[in-house]
Length: 411
Image (tube, rainbow, N blue to C red; front, side):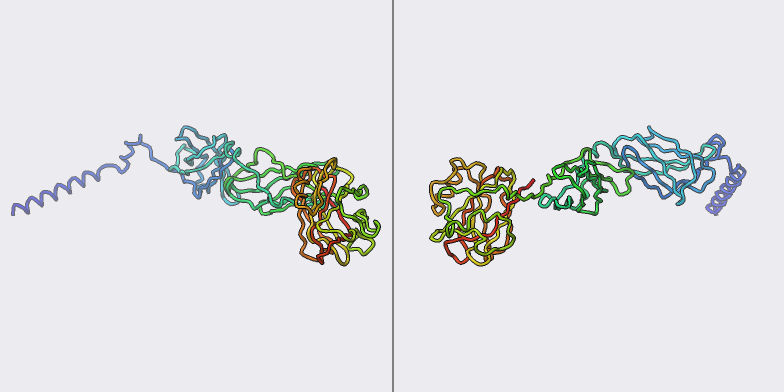
């Protein structure tokens, strides 16, 4: 019975305390805030950042709260800040705040919306915002071109096609490469190669002039600014092939050069008479009967060429066409003749010792009749005199026939 009495007394006490508490005003909490109510303006939403060159853009959808008059942006642990007036959003109901003069760094920003009474919203935070600058810019590299096939050159129409490698994302996102070159009229032209192109045509290119290029990048896909490589690079030297002038070619008769068929009726000079395609007797070079293999002929190109690059050789219309032959070159034949004939095993080494350079060892797999071009060695020495050492002819005989020799110099 005593236990029940104690429970009744406890319930009565709690009821009295509750009744007394209800007598207090529901605004008594204001005593803790200076009799002021806390008001939080509406907060922005859908916030993103866009990095730039020593600046950043903060884009968001503003709150529909009509009392908001400005926005506060803090960074560097609130040591730096800017105030932006609330303006009408754009057509997509977005606002953009630009924070300038930033060091190259990774930042966190806090954004408050502020109403006309100075009340701040709860903070909206955006982290890991990268700002780019000179360090990033100085690390950029120009887009790589195709070293193995840097260009094609149509020198008759003055058209150069530059060949670049596909872009990558090591330096960011390539947005283009500016090509600068000279025209035949002396004008400087700039053309842009877009990131999704690997080739670009330069019309009216002036032969012998430099081509320079500089690439541009954005560090991130939605970046504010484009960064260009600090300096232009020089493109691979552009060369054209120019046919050597046959009007100044001349015969040279060095010791052990092969004799000519039938009383000089088919001399070496037939090889630069301008004939086109395989020719028949007597409009050919024809070595003398009784010759042996290997055999050599020599000619003077009439001037020194510093970059002799291509030979075209055309055989006879029937037989005796060279299938294996060597092309040797030298710029001065004074005391340059070997003391043994071309069939001697020591001939090649003696030629080298005398200053000759082997420009190409040619092997033809056809019958040797048709005109065929052969690239000579890269970066040859200066050449004026050519010696052809014929080692094998079609049919396996000991006399050789050819219709025409044409040379091109790379300039």
